[in-house]
Image (cartoon, rainbow, N blue to C red; front, side, top):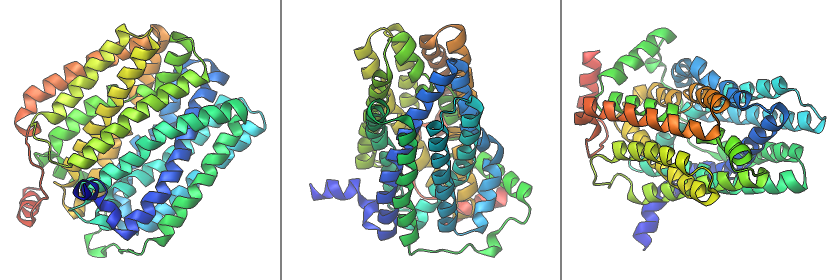
Length: 425
C-alpha cells in the first residue's frame, strides 16, 4: 500500500516542488472559478456563440504569437523569478475583471482585452513551468510531477465550477473574479519559498533568438520520438480538446438548462480528468499497450461523435463528458512525458514551448472553428464535426508514422544520443 502511495506522490517528497504544488492547488481552483464564470458571463452579455468562441482567440492567441520567442528567452532568466512575475500579472487581471463586473460593464471588448492580458501571461508561464519541473524533482520523478501538476488542474475542474455556481447564484459574479485574485497569494508564497535558484549558464544562451527558434525546430524534426508525437497532438488538440467552449451552448441551448446545468457539466468533465490523473500517476510509464497514445486519440473522436447522437440526454452527455475528460488527460500526460524524457536539457525550454504552442496555441483555431459550426448548425453539430475530423487525421497519421508512435518504452535521452542529434544539425 505504501509503495502505491509512494509512486502516486513521489514528486511531493521534494520540498521545493511540494511548496509550489500546494500553493498551485489553491490558485488553480480559483482560476477554474474564473474560467467557468467568464464563459457564462460573456455568453450572457453577448448572446453570441461566435463571440464566445472568439474569446479563445484573445485568451490563447498570444501563445501563437509569442510562445516560440518565449522558449528561447526564458533560458536566459531564473525560472523562479519568471513565475513570480506571471502569477502576479494574473492576479492583477483577476482584480480588474472583478472591477469591471462590479461597475456593471457589459462591454464585450473590455473583457476580451483582459483575456488578452491573461493570454500573454500564460504564454510565458506555461513553458516556464513545464521546463522547471525537471529542476525541482529530477528526471526520475518527472513523470509523477507532470501528473501531479495536471491533477491539480483537474481537481480544480471539479471543485471550481461548483464554487462558481454557488457564488454566481447567491453572491455575485464580481466576487468570483475577486476570489481568483486572492487565490494567487498562496502560489506566490510557495514560489517565494523555493530554495533551488538555478542560474542560467550564459554559455548555453542562443545569441540570436530567431536562430535559436530554428535550431529548436531542427531538433524536434530530427527526433523520431518528438516529431510524430507533435503531429498527432496537433490534430487532437485542435479538434478534440476544445470541449469547454461548447459547454455553455450545450447547457443553455441544447439541454435548456441554466448556470447550474453548465457548472455540473464542467464538474463532471473535471471528475473524468481527475480519474485520468490518478490512473496515469499510479501507472507512470508502465502502460503495456504499445498503441496507447493512438488508441486514446481515436476513442476521443468516437466519443465526440457518440455525444452528438445523444445530445438531448443530460445523463448520457454527462457520462460521455467524464470519459472525454479521462481520455484527454491520459493523452496529454503520455505525450508530455514522452517528449520531456527524450529532450536534451539545452533544448527543453524550446521543445516545451512547442508543446504549449500545440496544446494551447491551437485553441484560437479550434474554438473559432467550433463557434462557427455552432452558429451555423447548432451546438451539438460541433461535436460531430470535430470528432469526425479527429478520427480521420489520427488514422492517417498512425498509418504514416506507426513505426514511431507505437514505441513502448520512453527513456531519458543519453549523452551519446544528444550528441548524435546535435551532430546531425
